[in-house]
Amino acid sequence: MYAQIEPIGGYSVATALSSSSASLNVSLSRPAQGAIVVHVAGEVDAATAPDLAAALGPIWSSRPARVVLDLSGVSFLGTAGLSELLFAAERAELEQVTLRLVGPHCVRRALRAAGLTDRLPLSADLGEALER
Image (tube, rainbow, N blue to C red; front, side, top):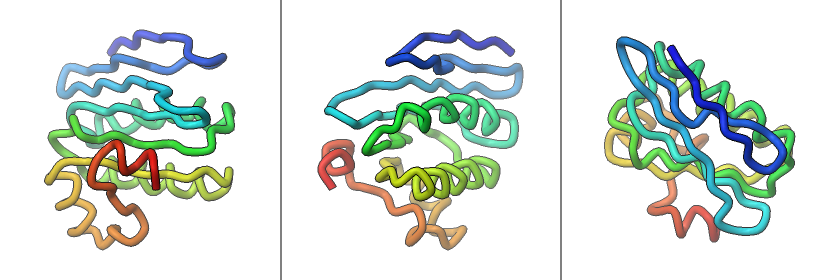
């Protein structure tokens, strides 16, 4: 496994993570004052969920007003990935940060199947997630 670390706004985040069985790409952007968008692409499963957790960890210390998890590039979301999303929601609530998710059909389906649509609501698109 390798990790490319890139400093952003006083903290570092893993921007490319992969293992032999699966890969996950995570990058950050700051499209608006106080907002951080975490762009996630690939499969979020038991092999890659710890990598997502490692990328999200430093974000909370920067005290953003809003975090958007842009899961548009996710092709599979397993139970380990759902657990990481729940942990992110709990951390956002603890830190009093607005958390929004954006994702494709596979993410919507996984949230619906797990009964998490109320706890982890999805915005229609990135623009809506940044405005709501």
